[in-house]
Length: 494
Image 1 (cartoon, helix red, strand yellow):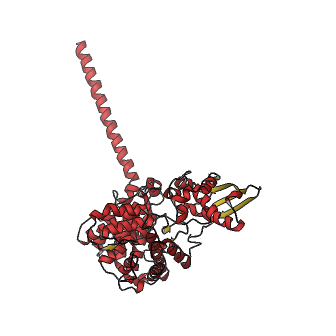
Image 2 (tube, one colour):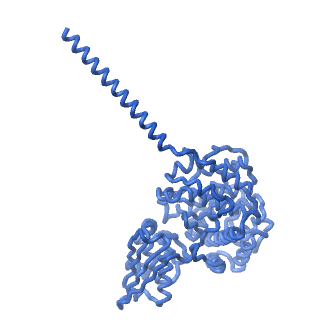
């Protein structure tokens, strides 16, 4: 009898334990479900449809004069940097690798004799436009919108004719799309390691290409959805050829998306804003107001800026300060004992390379950038060449450059102190660097930058023709003339 009782008690204990386990699991699951529901975001607006509807409903006459002007300046700057970068080793390798596989010769490789199919031309020109890190920059997001958007648009314009007025409108719409989407997820998206030019760029390229192709709202929604499926670029690539791959691929991805959508290739209706869509997958920040509010009234395109220096934008305040001090005091490297900088944390995060060995690495070295600016009084592409980063005078001076991180210093600011060997201390504070929205490059400065970049690639007369075509883009009967006028060996628009 005792044996039976013990057995019964053991069975009862086992049953109770199992019951408690089931109850605990059920309670935990319910708690998790409730917590999940509490954290679940409210239904976002139909962002993808809103962008598509706005893009297909916009006409060239809807663009304000300041937006048309800034879009034109974006075009001018883009062609200058793309032509200038067209014979960089990076571009040569890309052309060599893709030549056996490129399709019909539909589009120009800017600054070169070769012609590739539209998508491969868009890629190569996108690489060329970014390889010097000298392209346009939207300072709020650090997006370089011209490379993805114009590379796509210009290549397509040679295959699918479009007049200059429609071309500039498509350019503005594409850039606006990329920047608004970037605003919605920056800075979290960027801080996670994404190269935002490569991730937001395909949207802009798809809208610009889709506008030229005449997509309706449904097909533009699909184009945006297909673009959302093709984010490209990680910040780990900075300082290598891979960095310029990102805007190149963003350009070809955008064209790819638009061409497929034009033929009815479908996508989700909410690929940007859906719970498992683009924004929620790659960012913890989603500010949909940045995308939809004021469409057609508030223009991010008008805030685009252009680099006077051929490197990351976070270096520009330091370079500006160095060049100003050099000019004001006629400094020579032999006079300088030390250079101290107070900079925003982003400066060392992005440009902390102390001993760059190649020009591309120099673009991500605050030590090199300050030293070369003090030595040569400039920071163009020549100052970020292999020659410059190995120059003994520059190398010696960069050993005397000491940046100190200070979160109180904004990214657009710097405090520089140059200590001289005779005991003097020279200081310079930069509140807004040249090239910023507040201190923009003039039209004349942009032309000079273009001419400097094109020198050695195109004859001076061809360069002048190309500059004039950019300023008068809205008068062109066929915008593809821009690309053909930028081909090596061209004598003018054909």
